[in-house]
Length: 85
Image (tube, rainbow, N blue to C red; front, side, top):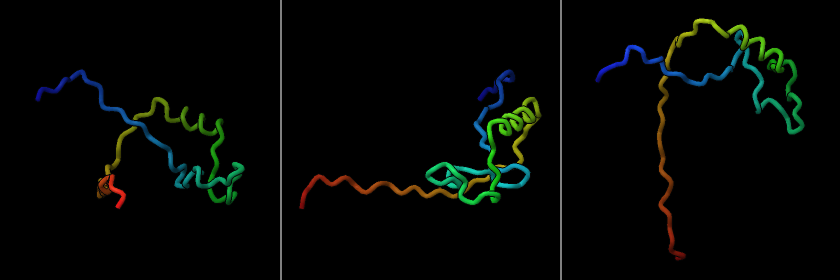
């Protein structure tokens, strides 16, 4: 295989899970009315805070520190039965 020296590195979408070691609020942390279930337990990022974090990361040299492979078992669906026995 011939590699292209001018090829750009592969890209991927990252998701922010923690800020300063604390897990940020996700969908499961809100009730049906949109209020935080346990205030103070998880930080809630508003648009200004999220934009501030994004601005701080923009232009920074980022690298992957580790890659984890987790076991995955695929279980096929049961066969489709057309009989009405």
